[in-house]
Amino acid sequence: MPLTASLRRPGFRPLPAALCHLSASGAAVLLDHPLRPGTLVELVLPGGLPERHHTFAARVTDAIRSSGGGWLVECAFFTPLGEPQVVLLRPAAAHT
Image 1 (cartoon, rainbow, N blue to C red):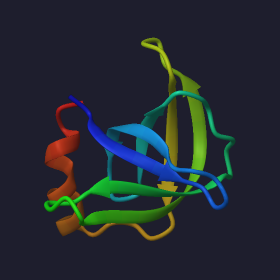
Image 2: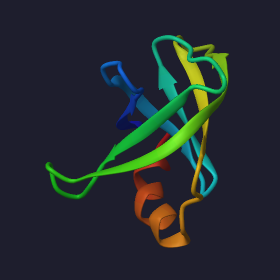
Image 3: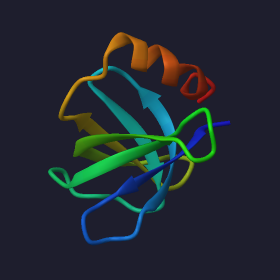
Image 4: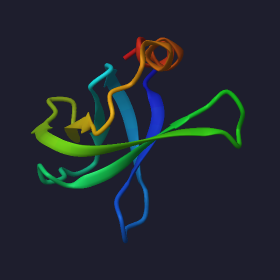
C-alpha cells in the first residue's frame, strides 16, 4: 500500500497524494489531477508520531496520466535529501 502524503501549494488547500517513488533528488506522487511543470509545492510525509511530519520544498517536473487512474506527478527537491532521510522514509515507499 502506498504511503499517504500530501502536496501543498501556496494559496491552495493540500492535495491528498500517494507516494510512489522517493530518491535523494525527488519524488513521484499519484494525484487525482495533474499539476503543471514548474509549480512550486511542498511534499508532506508523515513522521513516526501522529503530530510529526516531514516537509520538503520541490518543483513539479512532469505529470503523466497513470494507466490505473489519476496522474503521476514528478517533483524535484530544491535541496536533495541526505542518505539518512532517504533510508528513514524509503521503507514506507518501498511497498509501492
